[in-house]
Picture 1 (cartoon, each protein chain N blue to C red):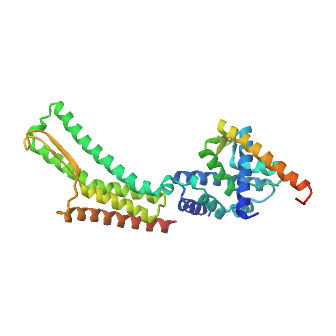
Picture 2 (picture 1 turned 60 degrees about the horizontal axis):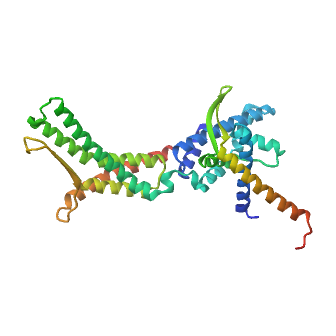
Length: 113
Length: 231
């Protein structure tokens, strides 16, 4: 896999994971990154270079919305999924499950075509 | 140290094509991210200085800038549609301000007349009106061009496109003329405005366009040089 195609796949995965978490509850950037890291047992680490551009893109497309909120003296930008974002999440989840099943079938099956 | 680093990141993001507003927001989020990371590292037993150093080391500035550069959707409108932003936009602003200025003058004179001020019997009013119109015609192009340059500079817009915008405003400004004639000089109040281009008399418009372009360009180049030094 070329670095470009790998980056593109990872970008799609980040979008899916971010939308999934933000559909559950409101979160800020660092919280999202840490939650993904913890839930995947350090399997997926979303760096700032992927996280913030992805969040801004999703917001620009109307899939999530943001607001500044002060909690315990710290002001952060909190994100949450919009209705459009939740619909997009359903589509991405279907797509991802198809890919996952396909890859799994090939990995589990005989090597010869 | 950290502040200087963030200034440098902001500069890189602006050069990558992001709008100043988006850059401010990303910097705010990155700073907050860094603070959270420092807190987490301290929670794992690192000293404040160690946590700061480690968090700073983990912040991959080049990757952040590269990611911003690769996503045109995040770029400012000026970067995404330079032809429209650098030609139509300044020309439209100039035309709108010129028309607005003239309309304001006319409305002010009508209001003064309706309030009982004898506009028609004062040559002084005529002189003030003419001076105002000349001011609009001569100063407005340079003012719009300078404002446009400040706008372009805040977005680190490419020099060539900025100069195209300045040149267009300078030429349009040099072609614009306006006169408002009031009694007793003319029997009725008359407003005239338009664009003039004639091959017979080219020296004056060329001189006006050239002087506006040169003055604004020199100021802009000086400003961008100062900006680069500060960064």
